[in-house]
Image 1 (cartoon, rainbow, N blue to C red):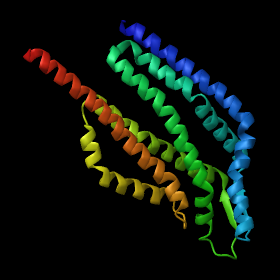
Image 2 (image 1 turned 180 degrees about the vertical axis):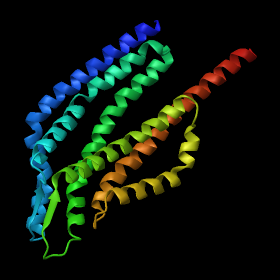
Image 3 (image 1 turned 90 degrees about the vertical axis):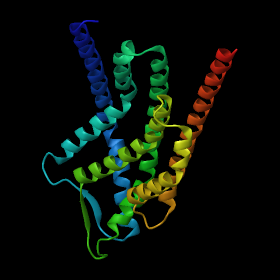
Image 4 (image 1 turned 30 degrees about the vertical axis):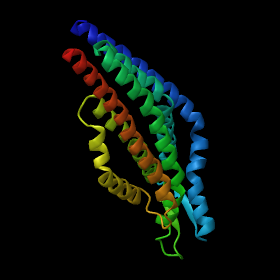
Length: 250
C-alpha cells in the first residue's frame, strides 16, 4: 500500500472507531441515571452507617449536565471497546506475519476480558474505600462531596485496577517474542508478590483486609498463569530445537 492508501485506511478506521464511541455514548446517556444511582450508593451508605449528612454536591449550574455527559462518554467508551479495539487490530493486520498475527490475536482476545474483569474487581471494592476515606471526617461534620471529583476518583481507581489485571498478558507477550523466559518470570515471584501486595494496599486503603485480598488473589493467580503459559511455550520451543538438532546430527 502507498502512503496515501495507508492514510485513507487510517482515516476509515478512525471514523468507524469514533462512530462506535458516539453510538455508545448515546446509549450511555440513557444509562447515566442507572450509573449515577450506583455511584451514589456508597455516599448514601455513609449517611446511614456513620450517622452523618453525606451527599454529592454540584457546585455549578452546569455541574449536573457536565457529569452526565462525562458518564455517558465513559460508558460509551466501555460499551464500544470491542469495536474500536478491533479497528486498531484491523489497521495493523496487513503489516503482520502469520506468526505475529497469531500472537496479536491471542493478545487481543485475552486483554479485553481481563481488563473488564479488573474493572469489575475495582468497582467491587469502591464502597469500602469511600466508606473508609469518609470516616476520617469528624463525627459531627457533614460530608459534601463534589460530584465531579467523586466520579473522577472512582474512574481512576477502576481503570487502574483494570490495567493491573492486563499486565500479566504482557509477560506472556514478552515471552513469545523471546525477551523473557518462564524461569526468569518464576525467579522473580518474590518481587512480584511484594509489588502486588503494595499495589493492592495502596489501591484499597481499607481498614479490613478483605478488599485487599479480593484484588491480590486474582492478580497472583494471573501472574502464575502467565508463568505457566510461558513455560509451555518454552518447552515447545525446546522440543523443536532438539528435533532440529537430531535431524541435523542424523
